[in-house]
Amino acid sequence: MPAIAGKEEARSVSVSWYQSRKRQDFIKKALAFIVLMLGAVMFIAPFLWMVSTSLKAQANVFSPDWIPDPIQWRNYPDALRSAPFLTYFKNTAIITLFATVGSVLTSSLVAYSFARLRWPGRDFWFGVVLATMILPGVVMLIPRYILFSQIGWVNTFLPLTVPPWFGGGAFFIFLLRQFYRGIPMELSESARIDGAGELRIWWQIVMPLSTPALAAITIFAFNGAWEDYFGPLIFLNDESKYTLQLGLTTFAAGGGGVPLWHWMMAASLVVMLPVIIIFFLGQRYFIEGVTLTGLTGR
Image (cartoon, rainbow, N blue to C red; front, side, top):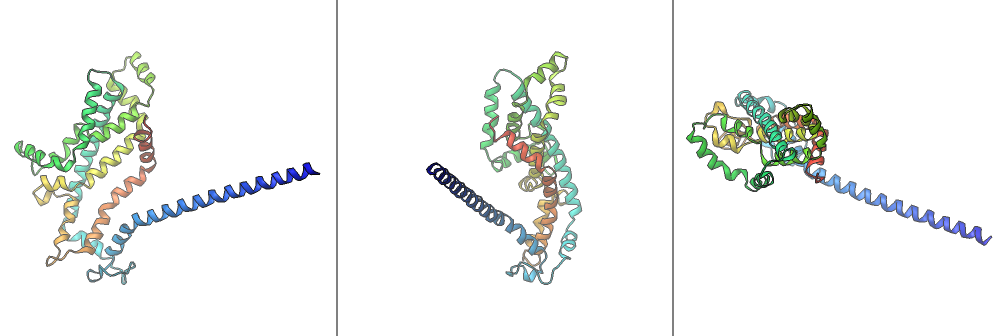
């Protein structure tokens, strides 16, 4: 009997400990969920305010009501008709296409050299490339303007489309180099034995295996080119060459010097749509690419 009582007591203690541990896990998960929900609300609140403002009348823009009454759906066509947004969209699409393709191809090629080839001074020059990340892009705008003005590129798309074809950026090179270092070298060695050159190895072996990393930098490059404001502001003078970001500033003056916030928010949401679509289409590859490159230390 004492033995049976001891077993029952041990079982009771074990069940009590399990229930206590289960309760603690539940509380931790609940707290984490609450914190994440609060963070999500904080991040999504400005977007919801944009949507709400885009559907209000100009006189009710700063009203505390989140649900407009009445809803002004005509703000969207009115905003897009108030300026040549079709021209702005065409210009932005051209710049974004060339800048994105150039960034992806050239940064991938440079990263392949740093990760898969051995040549004198490789590590030193990789350090130099990383050191360029210290310089903010805004600091380089004026020197770049002076350079491009001397060669006659100002008021053309060339200052916005040509530089991405020369490496694409230190951040992209770093991400791709980290990913390429995780690809087995045996694949490249086998290809070399079969007579393949380095360009063919890069294009037919390394690139197809790097879809997550390439998708990640494609999204970064697309967002950077699509949302670029300072570049077009500095280099473009002719309104017929303006991009969407410059076009949105036309609402800042508005009528009589009063910003047309309802039209600005409506046009901004339309301009934002391609970025949202691109991100959701490549979301899985984007998260996987960032995880396998910059965060794992490969």
